[in-house]
Amino acid sequence: GDPGEGRTASGDEVASLRDELQTREVQLEAAQAEIARVRQEQEAKMADVVRQAKEHLKQSRARLDAEKGELVEKVADLEQKLQQSQEKVQKYQQLMAQAKSRMETYEQQERELRDSLTKSQTQRVALQEQMGSMEKVFNIAPTKEEIAERGGVL
Image 1 (cartoon, rainbow, N blue to C red):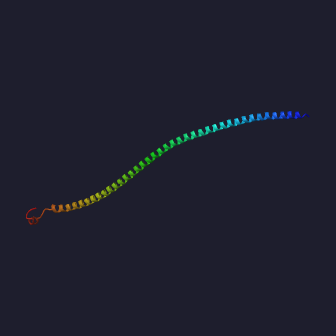
Image 2: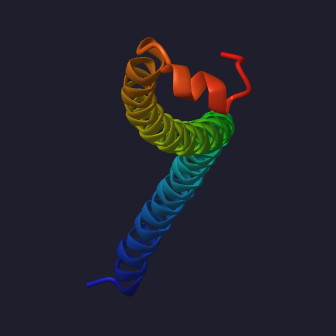
Image 3: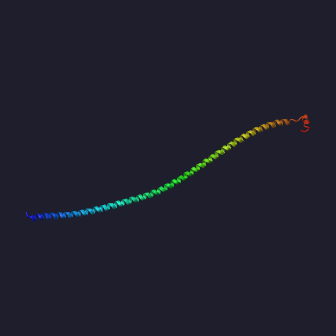
């Protein structure tokens, strides 16, 4: 062995290692660039997904707010109709109570009129009987004595 040969072999090894190191550095830079590119793509995709989700949420919220408004309006309308129905029922109940009261009054008046009619009919029969007995008395011609007692006048 020549001591110079070792150096050459070592020099070749160092050069080879430098070449390999440089190749690896280039590969590392390429990998880092690829990682940065992929990360940027992923962040862009995530930002797009987040943007779409926010837009969907915004649209859903707007739709739900509109539906809520419609429902609130319907509920108010139904409450108004219920109130009107309750007022009608109350008026109907008042009218029915008034009608019942009037019917009771009319029935009482009818009873009183029937009682009065019965009383009048009873009085009429009694008067007819009196008239009948009076007719008997007056249909008999007065005697000469009765005429004399009355001063000779019938």
